[in-house]
Length: 395
Ligand SMILES: Cc1ncc(COP(=O)(O)O)c(C=O)c1O
Image (cartoon, rainbow, N blue to C red; front, side):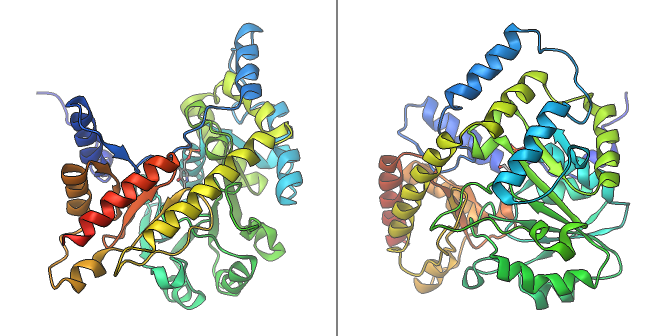
């Protein structure tokens, strides 16, 4: 008899989505015409110049360990990119490069959170958050939101949640799964409440370049009074269709960035040298590919929003960024006088009866909704939405 896995692994749940993913694969293997609105990554190839830079690295010996926090060349390129795109000032010493945004988030949480610290997390949330908070020994304090307030938190709600134990407030903008984004004014309204605490703000901006209707990214780091406490996180994944390259960065005050870099250097030595070299090309080039992909997503956003709006008793704020829509569907059951079976049951039935793969809202902390991704062709979006409409009409 040998020892079981460590207790910390029991604190973390494995993704409920696995059931849906496994069933989708089984139906496809059976030849069923499953249409997927469940993916969380761009359906584009990584742009050619970035791919070429990766190949160059492989062929020219850029294949060894690098500085633990990322090469100086890449951190300089990221510093210039952030100054160009967000008008924010971060020196290379204030930047940590990791294996994707998720890895940056984990590093920052491990660097900032002590056992028992509270972390405020608005729901619906990106599903990794509660688990990473718990891994760091923190206690997630979940704030519920609603489609009526575009799934954003209010200053009063935040004020009620803050306690002397609050170590961090997570803001994800644009958000996954709701795809709504804070405006500068909305962040300004939260600022006085945040300033009454000593909390860090973890500002997840991995979708910062996927914004629609002419919106500009609003970050807490843009506000001078919040800049020092903001841990700004972004990534190559969504902006440059580079999910598999695993390359992200985090910025903040030097001390916390150095603490996170120390953890990272012992755990992974450094991010991939090849991905780092390709990332220099991604963040430094003319950004035309990035803008082209954004325009395609905006067209698909218009399409899916117009289709979802036709569904009776369903509420969904218009996606302002990212590539998801998060319709609240429980009202459709209420209107039919039937008990709502929960989002996992709805997702499974959509899969079994209509061959549509979606993500149950419960995995994002909101069981009243399902997440549809529009990282799919217009044809797939149109067909899938018409099958969901048919399903809802039969409740
Ligand atoms: C809100 C949010 N943050 C972070 C990530 C992680 O992105 P990556 O680790 O690929 O940079 C994702 C990916 O889906 C996300 O949706």
